[in-house]
Amino acid sequence: MKRGRAVVVGAGPNGLSAALTLALEGWSVELVEGEETIGGGSRSAELTLPGFLHDVCSGVYPLSIGSPFLTRLPLAEHGLRWVHPPVPLAHPFDDGTAAVLAMGFEETGESLGREDGRSWRRLLEPFSRHWFALASDILGPFPILPRHPFLLARFGLTGMRSATSVVGRFQEFRARALFGGVAGHSFVPLDRIPTASFGMVLAASGHAVGWPQADGGAQRIPDALASMLRQAGGTIVTGQRVKSLDELSEAELYLLDMTPAQLLRLGGVRWPESYRRRLARYRYGPGVFKVDWALSGPIPWRAESCRRAGTVHLGGTFEEIAASEDAAWNGRESEKPFVLLGQPSLIDSSRAPEGKHTAWAYCHVPHGSRTDKTAAIEAQVERFAPGFRDLILARHTFDTAAIEAHDPNMIGGDINGGAADLTQLFTRPVARLVPYGTPDPRVWICSASTPPSGGVHGMCGHLAAKAALRSPEAFHSLD
Ligand SMILES: Cc1cc2nc3c(=O)[nH]c(=O)nc-3n(C[C@H](O)[C@H](O)[C@H](O)COP(=O)(O)OP(=O)(O)OC[C@H]3O[C@@H](n4cnc5c(N)ncnc54)[C@H](O)[C@@H]3O)c2cc1C
Image (cartoon, rainbow, N blue to C red; front, side, top):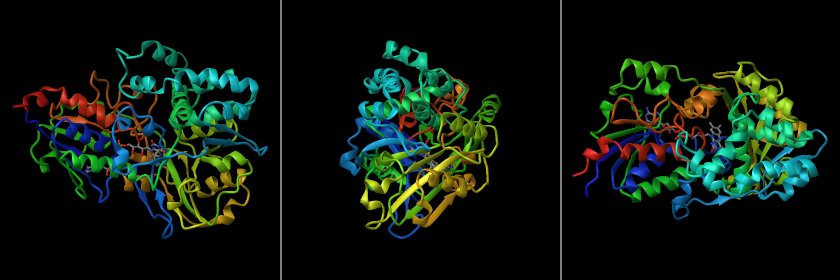
């Protein structure tokens, strides 16, 4: 049976996943990307010195190795290999110790103390043990008919609360801080609901599938998806920044890996004013300021477990992290920002010349902030790793405008495709039964501005493509 023709705009992880889903269903697919390189928020480049390979945006992939869609694909045959650090995450304290999130629960428990180790396990094990069942219900639109209702209900009871209320169960600062740092990935103040869900999803995934990185760099992820897409007959055009659908070839379906601000500027779509007004009300969240370093040696952490961790959260106590996240959300700069740091060359020698290292770190800043946070970020690293500054051979920095220039979907430096607070987590970009659809039946949205929001999991693209395939437009294209 002959299938229809689709054009996908934007070769980020979601655009690639949408294109691949359609191509695997037998559709003729053209993927059009504005940049010369594919990958959007999943690219690698020599940002500092020759021979030092940096992940320009994303670098840690619990949501990829834990994605119900990506794990079904034979990406290893297309050059993608996950590498795991000995410890996914460490969270150092001023006393020279650190809490750790390890695969399994033993080492985590030891680092948190007996009572809190037990509480941590009780909180997360039911979900890490059934990670893929949980992921199939939560990595998508609000599940009206969940596949695993009891598991989801149990998750929702705690996940729908604020991180601040959930850490009340811990006796000591270590577990509170570890959970707060993970929940901080939400970019939402930690006293708001449902920030606990971010902490639980990322912590449970860490215990279940780890927080790996892509061997050889982030670029390997889109490259593997693109290789599969071409094998399935799809084509990819780069260097074409699409301004109107009228410039694209004729197709039954158009899937757009873009956020509302860009969609509103796009020509050639037939949307009523009421839908445009709703898109215009879409809110973006805080941005990030990122630093990449070329280093002459590994970071000299005081806490031994930090030297084995892929990711290190630098923010001290829960209260300190909460204050930093509250500031970024409310348009204030934090003097002591919560810093998320990665050290990929510790487990991947292809990232730097022999004996040398790379590291990256970013902090959350007010939306559109142009403040240089390099000194504040480096002070946080130095706080837990004295001597760090002496190792810096070169650095590259990105403020929110530079990140948006690198990838136009990162509006004002927002890396999640829009604020992921309660009102926009499930109903993004607008409240609709099928959030991927638009009033123009040919046009579908497949970016991180749709459920389940930011992260390299491909689920927005995959679910948008599946929804589009069920539409009358797709049906009429069949012979
Ligand atoms: C600093 C940083 C760190 C991050 N860390 C992580 C992490 O560790 N783990 C993780 O899972 N996620 C992380 N993320 C988030 C992740 O990168 C994004 O959520 C993810 O890339 C979203 O995928 P997407 O396909 O929706 O959009 P994008 O990856 O942004 O891709 C959109 C693509 O569409 C193209 N495009 C847009 N408009 C047009 C147009 N008009 N014409 C043609 N092409 C167009 C863009 O050029 C881009 O290639 C991070 C992001 C940043 C910036």
